[in-house]
Image 1 (cartoon, one colour):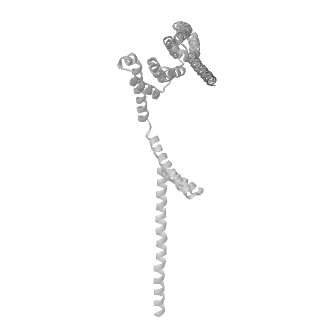
Image 2 (cartoon, rainbow, N blue to C red):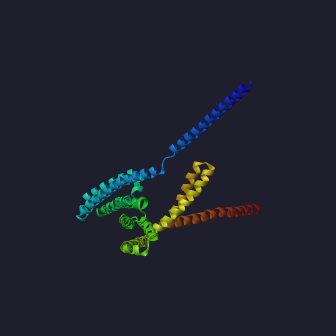
Length: 324
């Protein structure tokens, strides 16, 4: 019996040991699997550093090539326009400048997001766009098309480059030629506030033209006021007074809500104005008429009083005779 019990105990221990060993093996295998999973999820940093710069370099090389080709094309179009400009062929020059503007505007709008790959060449393309606009404005000015030149330069300083000094110079000149001295003064003041004296000294002729034009306009205004006849001044004052009277009366009329009063007021105002313009003949006639009225009235009064005082005397004399 004892042997049986001991054998059974040995079997139980062996089974327990096998279970424990199997559990330990499962735990180890699971840990190995976890380690394998974690290591497989995390990519190797060396592989990332090897692939990403290569892709960026390829994109940079491609975009730099595209930017360089676009810059060369814009410069060639500008050169063709400058060639025709020097030959005084402003129509063909304007045509080429507009072609260059259309090309650069389209290129910039499509590739502005890729500027980071080669910002140096991209900025040069933006500079060529400003040159094309500025040359186009100069072409308009040479063709005496001052309005288009003015609009082009205002677009340059407001949208492209507010420090483009040539545009301010042309704006002042075009405004003077269009007789818009107020605009010329405005941009001249802006020009002076934004640039130093060294830059402004390049455009002394333009500022002198503005000063002489201002003096001429002031002299014209002074002569016009001096040569204005006095009668017109008086009539203008009378009209101003009548307008003030009618405006005040119109206010009262609106309060009373009556249309007939406004007519009467306007009639009386016109009579007052007419009385001020009286003729000497009418005054003489009035004087004669008033004389007749005075003498006639005196004669009537004399006759009335004469009858009153003569009748009682006659009655008294008649009664005296009767008494006798």
